[in-house]
Image (cartoon, one colour):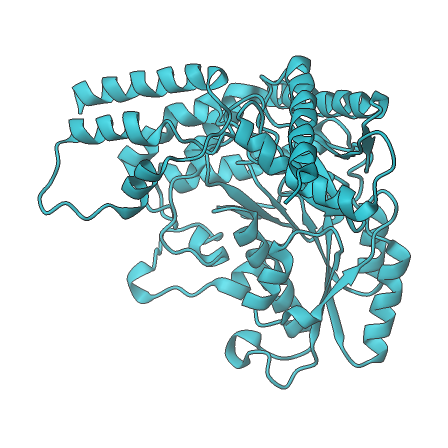
Length: 474
């Protein structure tokens, strides 16, 4: 371990240093794909030295790309140096952070409180826990919302399920994340009871339409129970009018959930845009997104943690801890019993950055997104599709001259894959307002304006290749 640990540390350092010099992404050759996906279990054990060699030669050459400064796809950040550094220590500890008096759960109390303080969310003791990601955090939060609604209506959802009760209705915007309907399905609510609320021209939830939908459902005998707003959508980074939505929730006794998985951290520099977030009953956010905490690490924050404990707590006799404080174990607030030591990566990342470093990270990346939007606006062959609120710029390529909308959609749908194939930048696409769009998400503080220019050059080169290919006969 001593000798190989030093080799692995060198390997990690060399890899991270080489990332900007490598292609952002490259296809995996067939023979390497066969090895990666088709290995047989070794009949006898292999030396650790051989495993390190395999990783060096057959794993590290084929990354996802999200450590590169010209990776603009999805919402995947480069890893924080502090998080990389401490990850082996968490593995060496290898605790279960379900609860108990040891470093893991105690440190989790601190980092959950830090996250709540950063985004301005009131944090009562025990009012949050780390999860695998925002999808699981959303399940925790919506289960708490379901629990509160059932208790208010005089029935026990844990004992009796949903059968025989009026449909519980969840409201989310047309730009809401797919984890919301997925959570509704897993919790037995049914995707038909997720009402999609239209958005305005800035891709924010239409509050007038929300009010009308709630009134319509009440009149039809359904049971509105929760509205889920977005604090930074993954398509455009839009932030819903949180204060106005909070008013609707209060007027109709709805649980107010905020999906801030990607964007809630923007509140550290722009509290006004995120006004109303502090009124939420629950908030999901992902330290493994903007903060760069190595995957996996999400967080569920709750204004009243007793409701989540009411929804999940089930303590078998062999796990009783008579010495636990009144908050109980983390495993009583969610679905995981054995829980990894995620807190160490969050603690290291936030301790290394400090509040000032978090602010600088957000300012840097949102500033680059605004710079990219300005470059798009000034270009004759590009057009913006949404305002920049956080660190995402959404736009599309429009070549000079008339081109049918259908052909324009085909072109923009094909551009991201061609850009990725070329290897100098990584871009993904989406649909906005019924049109194919390109979206660049900037999370890497090492990204420069030169990288943005290269991205636009690569989009143009990809489009030129695609147009030439499409014009060939046959």
